[in-house]
Image (cartoon, rainbow, N blue to C red; front, side, top):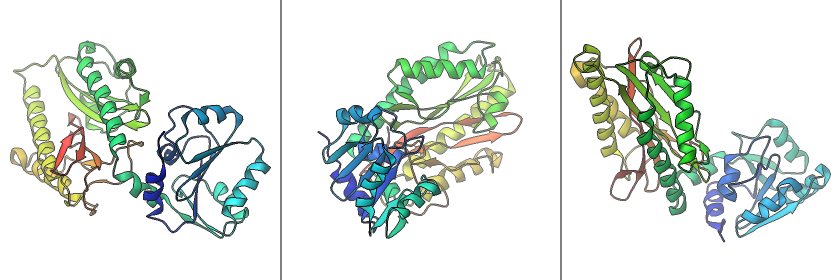
Amino acid sequence: MRSIVGRLSKIFGHTNADVIIVMNTGIIDSNFLYISGFTSGIFEDSVLLLKRKSATLITSELEYYTALQQKPNNMRVIKENSKDAIDSIIREQVSGRTVGINGSFLPYGYAKRILELGAKRIIDASGAFAEARLVKDPGEIALMRKANAIAKKAFAEIPKYFKEGITEKKLAAQFDYLMMLNGADGQSFQTIVSFDKNAAMPHHMPDSTALKPNSIVLIDAGAKYMNYCSDITRTFIFKPEKSSEKYARIIDMYNTVKEAQARALREIKPGALASAPHIAAEHYINTASNGIYNGKFIHSLGHSIGIDVHDGLGLSRGYKFKLRPGMVFSDEPGIYIEGFGGIRIEDDVIVTEKGAAFM
């Protein structure tokens, strides 16, 4: 069976909390999944009490047997439906102690309840979780490689569904269907499909825009597998008119973004500042083709990926932390021209001892 001691040690190594409480609301805190490893069950309002070498899960009868089937070593599962009984268990664990919570997730009312149950004080342990999750272990990396393989297979298959008149919404639905057929447990996020001018908006949501010849088709999607995410973007041209000025412009944008991604990848290595890859990509885009794309790369180069598709820190001009082996980021430069369209190429990248590699 899996052991959670290593993950608990990583978390408690970055906080002064005596005990940490992870409380789910109507949705699951992703840190609950990081500790438990559960891949089935809803676990709404379940409570996970963490100590340095063990964990206690309090859950309802609805989830009890699901938890027993999946629980790792060093985790005790308690079946309890009564709020008073749950409060009594929590009180026993927190009374007179410094209690860590995920301040970026837990609503005020839940935190107030912990104080009322006798905690000496509450501190925010969200940074400890983020730091622990930033460097992936081999098991996490294996799951992320699988999530990437599923999404990449869908990307390889999707062009045969490009047909004149198909809408962004229908193509997005087809892509999601392909990911599920290929083994995904779900989507990492809502799939983005953008045709032509809509591709100039990085977070455009699919609408009823119909596909026309000589158009940009930008798809940004990710598969979720055993809780772990992938995040990939590909840009295509549907029925290109190779003699047209528009086609030549798209190709120049595409080649510029592709080279920017490669230059960023070379800067992703142990010891490098997280800002370095972004600066390399941005400088290339701003100066390429006599500077016609200056200022057209309008977002950060990438973000950490894991259980959450945005799993903590990222690769941008503002981040100064040093890269370490086992960190996984997106490498996704882009060029966006209002009224014309956009090009983005995105791959998930793992920092290795020797540099970086695509997942």
